[in-house]
Image 1 (tube, helix red, strand yellow):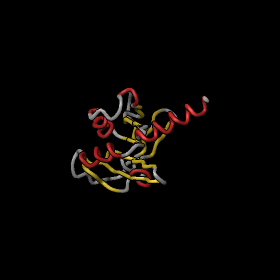
Image 2 (spheres, one colour):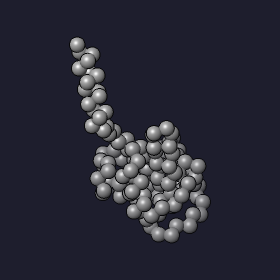
Image 3 (cartoon, helix red, strand yellow):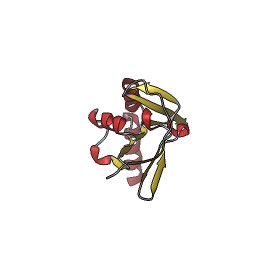
Image 4 (cartoon, helix red, strand yellow):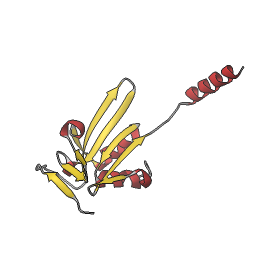
Length: 133
């Protein structure tokens, strides 16, 4: 497979493990968009599929690997773009390699963590039992 970058913008990257992050909160829902810093503002294509790694979507702040993994651990919804961040998230066992999609030689991964507190589980069980009777 041949990689094709349609546009380039010069981005200063301080080290290999720098990531652009945008955190989004709506009510009690939190989402993080994280990309490898060197992908910011680039366009990736494969066949008819074209994806722009937009600064508006990914580019709020630049963090190192430790901070990026902390955000990954604490955030229930993740949109990840880039071979480095996706590989680090897989290595840290936050997602399965089977969930990775590669477009134009760039890895993409979406993660949705579904967790419930013990109180929520008990409430659902009581509600289900109540409906049975």
